Image (cartoon, rainbow, N blue to C red; front, side, top):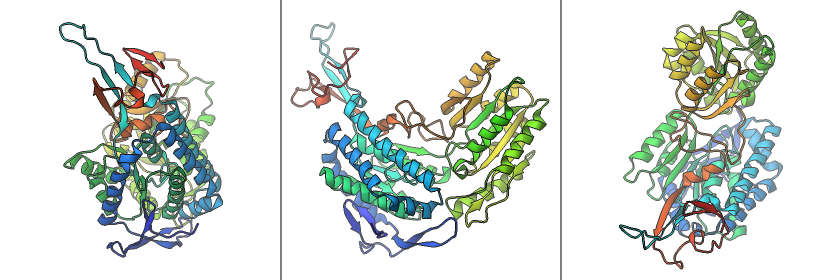
Length: 530
């Protein structure tokens, strides 16, 4: 498949002659700085309007398709993505500098989460069908028959993320969960990997054709500026937004979404430093193993994971110097990497410069910077708990292989550090459980800010499953009630509807007597599949 550099609005590849500007941009190889062909057309307001209107029209049909039909559609997307073969991996390597094995694994994750949502659709209980039958004899007034379930919210805009060109991009979790719910999706592709995005978009459109689904349930718009994304969020036909990216860009879009004449939910993942707490340990504790795991997690994917451990909280001990020496050795032995874009590298370097200027912050160790176009190095800094507590700048995310170690003089300082932390995607506790009461107190504090609390492991690596929560309080996400990973993500793109005293012929199948879908429902406060 040759790349066109054009937008997909429904099944059509749209030229810039749609009265848009002739502005274009190219992907850049992060290793060499080479400009990659072809040129990609910048999206405009007219592109956004056209895609939104088409999605709104398609919603009327797509939202009425059965869960079984949509399950087959998701599986068809996974099949078509795999059919792209090495062409997809090769283009993604050129645009991201990510290793082949990493991209192949991410492709597998992308397809597996599509298939997982297909399983959810076929099982059916995601609609949360609840039936309260009528009681005409209830006093003082008769009780009506009321039945509720979840339905699709409407067309959704999804912003592809930079760090996962497959799993959090065009056919990633946001798109999969929205399509599963019955919502058409317009993807704003990330400008760091437009060619990869176009290839995956082509696979989705092949699946739409194969399943004979309505034109307009999927569109892809390209753009390297903020204007096309802002325009999409403003379109009246759009009913929800999924976003993964920087705090600045995400907050700007969130403000647009909530200030519209008709405000809409904005599910934004804006940043997290993912604190790791190392509690008191005895002489049997293998700190060298801990240091190796911590640095491996820190440098995984060149630190460009949203769950990167950017903060380590440790107690002052008699062997602190030797412990820090082990971390220094791990940093020295770690390999420098290549960041996804030059702008990310520049942003990280600026952030490091600001960090080094803060009172009490000193460099523990870094390694030699990569000589690639977007190369960076791995760095660890150190600061006291007292300085950390009074300086909110030290909580700002540095997106890359950089972490700050906070040294606490007492357990009380550990709790004080935890008490000032902002919202996080994850919080991790390493403990031998010698002081269970303290561990309970700390975990209670952390569960109030984090979407996931881990014990004796590392936060990088997010299992895609039914129980996963990839969320957290602000600024980790804009809505702590939701998750962007796992099957519960489908609920972001649904809304509840109640039918009262509705004839059986009018009710959706999920709410009819006799349970024609054979799904689990709650009937008069009892769960049953009868």
